Image (tube, rainbow, N blue to C red; front, top):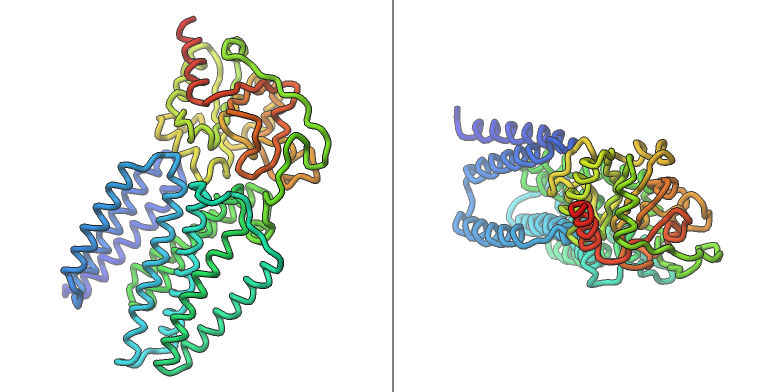
Length: 463
């Protein structure tokens, strides 16, 4: 077998591992193994590519050392609360890498004939990569709260974005059809325009839609990589990019369905631009909240026989997942049935709560989705909400004027008692007042989630 055949065989093996690993990511019990299998596939693909020759290996070694070092440091130091913004950054790095590949390959045009197909692939790589990079930086800044999480809107914004898209397509046509000098100027203009378009595309999207944006940008990074694969004629890059692009689009669709909204509504509605305080969106008074002490909350839980725990971003901020698992184990030892209800858009990235609970070794079989628990919520003795907000807001069912109207939520307000662990009555990342806090069967356990849950654990242990 010659070297070319061996390289192609390695690419086939890598592609099969990618597909198999991606399939395993669909189940929480196999996700970790699937991630390792996909990583093995990427390692095989990289090694095979390095054997293809014609490369400056000294710079590749420098890139491996510098990139590997930075990646290892980031992986060790990153907190689980910062994982969404880390994912946003990684999406952005994938986009800028594809952009640079396309830009670099454009310099081959003066020295050798380049087909129209390759030129189109180069321009798409640059366009999608630039949008992904700058858009991901804005998403990172919003998730890290370096920028306000609210939508930033201005008059005629959609018209401006549409004009930029048309301008980008015009520059693609100029780049493909023009001579070297004009084509180079068109490509540079396309890079600048793509970066501006990425910013303007994400700036008007509110914090509540960040899980959808993360999934969409992940898809963009895959599509940019796929286009880059066509530019450099690398089969495994085409396959890997297509898999990431397709899976990202599927995940985006799932996120939109979980919010009962279309993708266009997410991208262009400016969700969360208006916030309310003290009243519902319809203007009606919310009422009074009912605080509860740790000891009274303990008595409620001690007598309960069916308990639903609903985690949210507040649990991630407090890093309370381990004490939440400990509380769950104590409740089970006390004779209660305990389930963890996970909303698809809870947290600030897809699967955020699943990752946190898996880190705390919460059994997979105890994780349920809203469709599993909502039909029996009226039989639940106590629902414990830990830092969740928009995904448990009854306004989605009760207030047609609410931006959340129609969004499927976890109906914790229908449980016999609902205990909400939260620092204050402030709205969540979407900026929408939560009527759950003022329900007659809701008790507010104010304070840091980790300290509050630890206090409940101590009550059980002391008893």
